[in-house]
Image 1 (cartoon, rainbow, N blue to C red):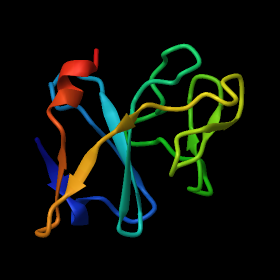
Image 2 (image 1 turned 135 degrees about the vertical axis):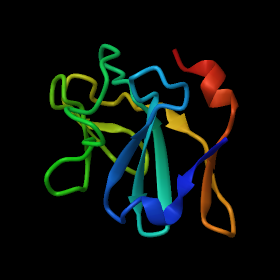
Image 3 (image 1 turned 180 degrees about the horizontal axis):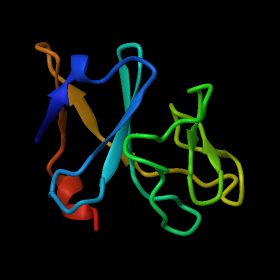
Image 4 (image 1 turned 90 degrees about the horizontal axis):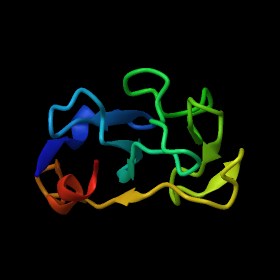
Length: 115
């Protein structure tokens, strides 16, 4: 499934996606240079959505993902919790593909697996 173009994701920023049109982002993507990291929008601690507002998944330094519910911090590259009540747990990865023309796609199975 087509999500966007790489140019639509500013370097060092995050963006949520709601492919089903449910009104809640099912997953989000963080861009670091040419690398994209996709994660389900669910904290492993107690299933809360991660963002405190639309597309706001990162801390002020933009070097960690932060859960708005309790401030847990996660590594962008691995999704591993490094601070907070879910220490040692990890976010669930979302497989992304960037095609040669810069289009970003997510596997359709993610749509079947997310609530």
